[in-house]
Image 1 (cartoon, rainbow, N blue to C red):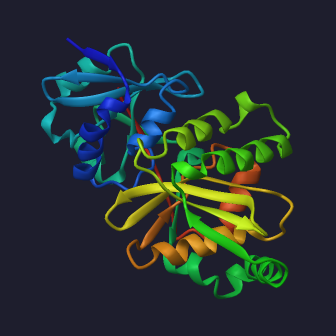
Image 2 (image 1 turned 180 degrees about the vertical axis):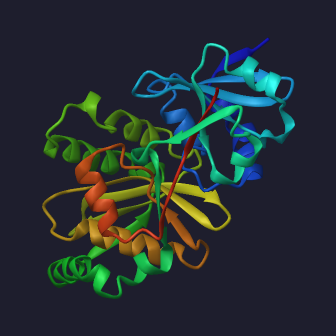
Length: 285
């Protein structure tokens, strides 16, 4: 039988260690994402003899299961039992597909769920024709403003929230249609979630921030990037500066998925991803 349990902060050490062992570039496999989206995705832990899983629900109301261990420890019978009343396993990396024989499983993927993976050195350099527009915006910013970037700590809470609220006010959608609440909780529990981030000040005024965490030893995942619209080129500056700070340790940056948002897809594509990381759905025939 399944033993289910609601996701809480107390699970961070166990889950973080599990994700470290899995060593996957998929953005879903970070504790912050599982915790912050626990209500949106209806996340619950499911414990079985063969391992630990997370049960969730996507925007299409499909029920899925996230394996939290290598699937070679489960047999077909166990897979069927775990998926009873659920639609598919997700997100499954391509390297795991050999564990799911084509004659017994149905494999598919949704392009909007793919993660955008970038070379950190490219984001730190903005070199070549691909980055011409971003380079121009960055140079315009540098010619007009001087930004002061500081590592985010608990003492920056009020300033980061003011940026977030300004960003929300400038958006054309309500709070329940954006990631405002998720980002607010990330700022509220920043240290408890072991996140890393930079807040940028312009003329001593809070102007923007970026928040993320290590995904694998060579990949850093950026969860949130929020900035004021009053400073042309600020986003380019933040991504470029963050990449410069991270490039000595991380080869790749994961900017997560576009969720089918055309504007987000256009923006993320414009930064020249090295590749799109497909996240597969695997169901039983």
